Structure formats: structure tokens, C-alpha cells
Amino acid sequence: MTKQTFPNNLLPDNINALAAYSSAKSQKLSGSTWLNANESPYSKTYELSLSDLNRYPDPQPEEVVDAYAKYVQLDKQQVLMTRGADEGIELLVRTYCKSGEDSIALFLPTYGMYKVTADSHNVAINPLTQELLLEGSSEQIVAAVGNSKLVFICNPNNPTGSVTELSKISAIAKALENKAIVVVDEAYIEFCPEQTASSLLQDFENIVVLRTLSKAFALAGLRTGFMLANTALLAPVRKVIAPYPVSRVVAKIAQLALQDDAIAQMRRQVSILNLAKSTLSQWLKDCPAVSKVLDGQGNFVTVQLVSKADIDKAMQSGLIMRPFNLYEQNNWLRISIGNEQELEQVKIWLDALSAQQ
Image (spheres, rainbow, N blue to C red):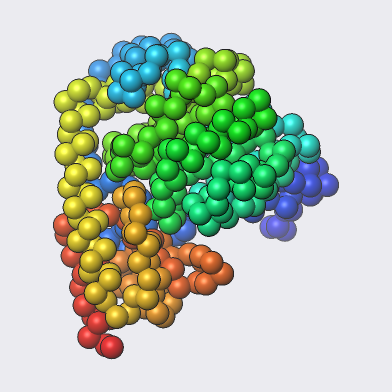
């Protein structure tokens, strides 16, 4: 059979040129220890009883929205449930940016879906740096943001783990009032809850906080997120979001995950993971094959190896971590915090590298 090709003349130029986001799971890898996707090592079992799947779900499941509003100490009208934080990113770009006219500001390196989403909607990228965000003054940052409509701050940042102080976020938001929306992506905030920008919503109309149940709540497979903002900012987003974004099954599991005892369990697990992260960071710093360890927040550690070949050896042995290019160098690795047995495999790999030095 002759291979068929789709005529590119039917595609908009921005989609034809689009470089899709390469997630950890999009790579067809085989292995025995998986520490590449910033997933929680804790699996959960939920018992469900659903007899009305023939009916459409609530557009915004009231029990889940109420539970999450209680968890983040906000009014329920300030909470919008989404299909992961990724849908929140897409909704903000689609709602607030004019295709072919507007831009979004990013502080690179950072989470790749901001760029992919903007590219897919023909929205320009204003590429700024993490160095500017962390070390520059709010005046310098605002000047660099220029006319960008959305300003994405991943906090803690993926993949570096760096944290932007709330005082700087509030200063940026104040300077951009009536000019731009500051989007604070808090996918990893449970690992440093004192850094949340949700407390700023009482003072600012132009701040959005994105959250997820994928990381600390150990529900990456559920694809559940939340957009937190004041009602006036959320109102147009509510017009744009799909009519039934959350299935009944997803809503029921999310509701169970947000009960008081489940939240307490999540916090205990976060404490364990944070301790394990400290141990892993020390192992990495003690290994002569590791040239740099980035100290940051989140459920991962990002490191630079002396030799990229050492990363390849780990992957070939079944120890799957996330290699990537950073600062124009290809010998960087992000290691998710796994359970004790998984991290022991990292220790064995590091010990073998140390023995070779």
C-alpha cells in the first residue's frame, strides 16, 4: 500500500511548524525503575459505586470544588476544576490572548507546555530568563515583560526547582495591574506550601494560580487540576471551558482524595519524600561523576553529570530518569523522588560511577 501523506496546505502555518511537547511518557522506553516523570511513588486504591454514567456529569462538580476551596482556604467561586493544570494553561491562552497579535512571557528554562500552547494558538513567545526572574528587580522584569498579555511563573520551577519569592510576585503583579495577568503554576507547591501565591488573591485581580492533583496527591493518572483566581478573571474562562470537562469517575476519585484524612496522608507522604530528597541530594553531591546539583523545591532533583555517557548507562540498565538539554548542555538529568527501593537503585548507580573515578 502506498503511504498516504496529509496535504500540509490545509494546516495553518503555526500548526505545521509546531514542535509538540515531549513528555516523559511519550518516549517509548523500557526499564525497571521509573524516576523520569515526577510521579508520586505512592499508589492508591479507591472503591467506586457509580450507577448513573448514562447521564452527563456536572460541569463543575460541586463536592470537589467545595472540598478544594476548603483545602486552599478560598471561596468556591474562586476555584475552577480543569483536566490537569495543562488545561488551565490552554484556557488562559485561548481566553485572554489574541491569535497573531499577543504574546506570553516565559522565564527559561521552564515547563515546556507554556510554549507549545502558545505556539498552537499562534501566540508569540517573549523569552526571558530564570536569572532575570530570580535576580532581577521587579522593575527590570516588568520592563522585559513589555506588552505580553500573560506572564508564566512556574513556582517551584520545573526543571530547576527554583522558587520565586512571594514579595517579588506581588511586586510584578502590582506593576502589571490592568496590563497583564501573572500566572503562577504551583504544580509542586505541596512540597513547599509556605510559598503559595494563593494568599495574594485577596489583594490582586490579575493573579492566577494553577494547581494539580498529579504530584503530591499521587493522582497523575487522573488528570485533575484547578485554576484559582478572583471571580472577574474566571468569568470569561468559564465561558470558554468545555461544557463537561470532568467525568463522574474523575470527580468521585478527586472528592475522595480531598477528604481530611486523605489530605493528612498526603502531607505525611510529602514529608517522607522531602526527607528522601535531602538524602538523594547528598548522595549526588558526594559523587565525583556529578558536577552540579541544583538545590530547589519539588519532588525531583536536577543534576549535571561530568559525562553524558553515564546517563546513557543508567538508562540502558533499566534505571529511567529524565535526561535533557539545559543551558545549551546535554549532560543534565532530572531525578524524580521515588520510594526507598527505587532510590536504592540510584545509589547503586552512583556508587558504581564513583568506583570508576
